[in-house]
Image 1 (cartoon, one colour):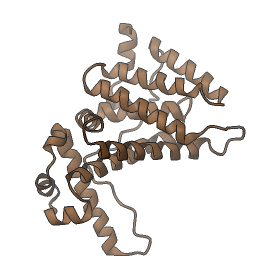
Image 2 (tube, helix red, strand yellow):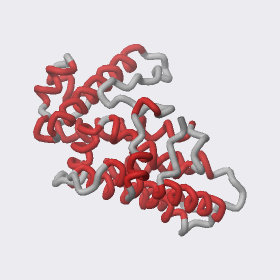
Image 3 (tube, one colour):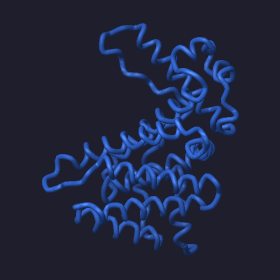
Image 4 (cartoon, one colour):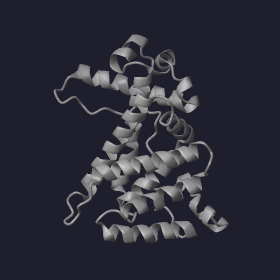
Amino acid sequence: MTQTATQSAAIRLNELDRRAPNPFIPVQPAPAKDGSGNRLAQRERRARILAATRVLIARGGLEKVTVREIAGLSGISIQTIYNLAGNRIRVVEMAISEHISTAARPALSQGSYPNLFFALADQMWINAVQNPHYTRWASMICSGGEATLNRRVYRHQGKVLAELLQRHYGGRGGTTADFETLACHVTTLTGAIALDWARGSIDSVEFRYRLATGYGFLLQGLDMDEEIAKAKSWYGDLRTGKSRLPV
């Protein structure tokens, strides 16, 4: 990539017109459907547990996460953590999955991109560059030796992406895309590129470019010609340094 393209792609964070959700702030739960204050209080405590877990992940990955440390950070007893969230591995899985849900959704409100695919690609990139320590270690955890954790997080991310794609494209006439399969491919691609970045094989500029082009290439297997045309234009401009995030 040329120096001009690199400088153009390395956008300052304060120029972005949106912000990635902070993984270290508890996610505010919706009120209980039955109006139960006790259930809402339980979900609020669980949110504190998961936010504290993400803080520990950012400090050094799975090895830094213990139920005792989670209790100390969240102010919630060890027994309550087991009751509300489960053991250490289960808590880590829930913490990463919860952030995936909240981190992807802002892409739906970004109308300045060629299509949702590029809004999603850049949302993933923004999440990474704004919260690099958490994102690096979360990526490493999800490619590690905890097979059950990896499988559940992968399935959760695929489900979130499929719902977003269905919501955005599902009502359009003539679209025959299999959104669940597409979401699986996007999830696999995202995980592989994120892992390369987490290990230091690529920098944040190349990370962004690979996400954009990868998502664009996936479009070519779909019956969505208009979206494919937008894709080629977008990642072509990104490579030459002409494309900027909406500001």
